[in-house]
Amino acid sequence: MTETVRCYNFSFIAKGAHVDAFAEALSEYCDALSHSELTNDPDTDWRVEGFAGEAIDKIAVETAVSLMASALGAETPDVEFGIYEPKDWVSDNLRSFKPISVGRFYVHGSHWQGDLPLSKIALQVDAGLAFGSGEHQTTKGCLAAIDWLAKYGPRRNALDMGCGSGILGMACAKTWHCPVMMADIDAPSVRVARENAKINKIGALVTALHSNGFSDARIRDAGYYDIVCANILARPLRKMAYELVNTLSEDGVVVLSGLLAHQEQFVLSAYRDVGLTLLNRFKVENWTTLVVG
Image (cartoon, rainbow, N blue to C red; front, side):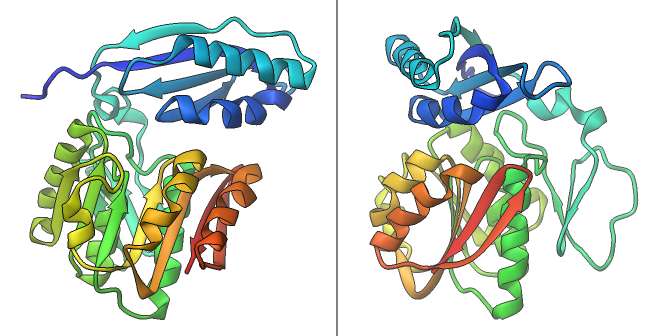
């Protein structure tokens, strides 16, 4: 039985031209952000939403929104706050979730009854209460990056930081048949990732831990990683640069995602400061995935 976990959120309406600026200003106050167009004109109204596993600091969010609106010369939006009770996100969207093909990977749900391409690495992913069914642009960018890295030799030890449903860690395990450490701040996500690894018959390769970043010593004690995947948000990626590089092997690479295109230099500069260089970038719509090493 799944434990009851609430999801806190805030939302407001903004002009399409201002959405990215608001998203950057608010990323530190939530675990995930989304924005969706309400009309066919991107310069009119969009909805911006933030989600968090813990109670949101309403005053901080309202202040950040007000300051950014002032900087943009825009009217300050009214921010609404709410609480979502647990919801099986994938089950609710099962009918619209079609298989996704990215490079060598073919991501599908358990409901898919069609043939699986023999030339692809199949990943069955049912996200449940965890974020990550492969549909988001950042996940596609990460899978493209892993596919690119697979052309340049084996990897021996992998880490999926902020694993969600475990899709990126599973892609590493199935590509290189190496041990994979998975970690997430959200306990239900860890359970979902662990179950997905078993479903994909790679449970023996995967260790999934409930951890706030690198706080669990077992992540650091598992040896140096030669590939780390971190699909989170721009500010957390920047903050964890020093801790992350200290777990990296001499020839290790890092796949960084969860950042909008205009946040690339903001994140990249932190990893350059700890001695890494840009190896490649993958853009999917207005999202960017960076490979550094």
